[in-house]
Image 1 (cartoon, rainbow, N blue to C red):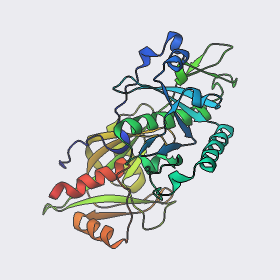
Image 2 (cartoon, rainbow, N blue to C red):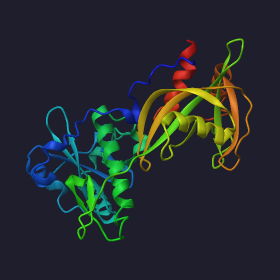
Image 3 (tube, rainbow, N blue to C red):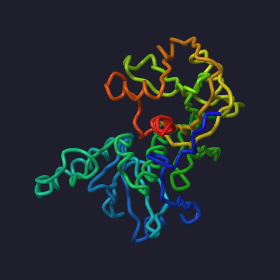
Length: 328
């Protein structure tokens, strides 16, 4: 069996927050939390977060009053500070941008020594979660994933799937309820498997199979992945997806770890599996081509810049990094 260790929590899998659903107040209302003097508010808009000085920007409750969007209770930190996130609508995003611009008109000094990019900018800046997932600390990245994932769900599920009527946000942002019937609808997470498919030659040489998605540039490669189907185990999903996408028969899937991927609502479940052979029959509609790489070949091409693979912000990059380092 291919010997890869379990992945340690990294990137978007990290979290130091406590979701603390039992302490939100009567009927999970946010009113009790909003009344606490230490509560802080975080802002998101369509997958981007307001960041400055190395952290998500924290607002006092009064400073966020009047901003429209969906309010969500995110939990608390080790010092018992409660956090509420607001997934802003477009009008509120514009209002926040006006406030930031107004502050700069009043005092431009923060810009004089401001870093050009990244989370250390002193002026509050909107950055995509993909771009800051490696840089934020454990507390902020956990809160950010929670807020972005729930914001995506709320924007896509404004009406009841049962009768098409509008729903209202209840339970601290964790439930949508249809007022007429009282039916409740909960956030969805779509499980997807992502796998390192490895073949070992009789002489012990290992090769990993990487695929080029039909929508990507020719030089871009990643691990194979696919969604788990109803009534299917994770292990069967690994075997099925590999065979469907590249015609390879694999066996002995071994779980490595997981990572939220709230773009919009996935949970990536990482595996390594053994391929019976290196024969491929690629489904060109989804995967344009697939290649086997030895460790030396992959290192060489990455160093030369002839191929591109995901960075470690994603579990794909983390699994690749673990496999590349397994012979050292």
